[in-house]
Amino acid sequence: MGYKVAVVGATGNVGREMLNILSERGFPADEIVPLASRASLGKEVSFGDQTLKTRDLAQYDFTGTDIALFSAGSAVSREHAPRAGAQGAVVIDNASHFRMDPDVPLIVPEVNAADIAGYTRRNIIANPNCSTAQMVVALKPLHDHAKIRRVVVATYQSVSGSGRAAMDELFTQTKGVYVNDEPTPDKLPRQIAFNVIPHCDSFMDDGYTKEEWKMAAETKKILDPGIRVSATCVRVPVFVGHSEAINLEFENEIDVETAREILREAPGCMVVDSPEEESYVTPIDCVGDYATFISRIRVDPTIENGLNIWVVSDNLRKGAALNAVQIAETLTARHLRKAA
Image (cartoon, rainbow, N blue to C red; front, side):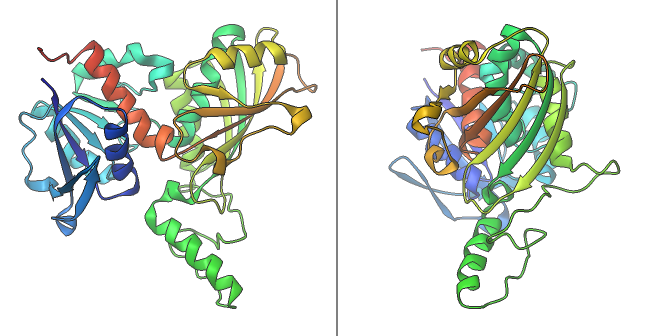
């Protein structure tokens, strides 16, 4: 006997990836219900070899639905996730609205799967920010070995992190440059074609952006409240795949070979790091893959017990859709078992 799964925001980038990954991984679903706004009512989406028509989220009764995967933005989650939870569905929410709620577990299964048990307080589980998710997958095994004190990270985030319109904007601007058509920013705050923008999400009073704050706050909640995190988040002209240059300061000694061996054995991690062969991973290499890739592992000689690493992952997968499905898999394996 399988599960009834609703996918909210099924016509968006992440929603479509959720459907793809549910199918690819053979999630035990007897019924998949794609949900979207009334404006998208009846649009078709693919699930394996099936074509499904979207239904109206506002009119949908979640009674009898086991799991609801949400990826439609914070406003939608704020309105509809509590309703879905109250009607008996366990919500796995990709938006930011519930992440810092003390009654909502914030989960990356490779890092803190045991915390999923806290879902019973509100029937909601939060998925972290895409940049946080891939970073903590790489940090967790190193933290367990040598205890991380401080993280300084610069991100190189693809435009898909801002949605389909931002991807279209990069495509249109890139074409326009070649025909002397002046690029006009719309979804993004500056020209993105042939440029980088040190501005992801809105600015806060302290000069950091909300994206940078999220990386710090979410890492503390997921991994360890004692870790200090300073982030600079940058949008780059890449369609899919987030990259991160991460500087780590540890409490205890750790060398490069030890770090490589630890990461090679860690769940969700793939080490591609051979300087003599110029072997490392770029965003193009990771698209469509499940893994978090780690390269450029090297000592930071300016601090005691310091390392630098380069981390790359498909942000639509591990940063969003894959992580949500992995949460659902862990939930069904440990807490929502169906009778045979």
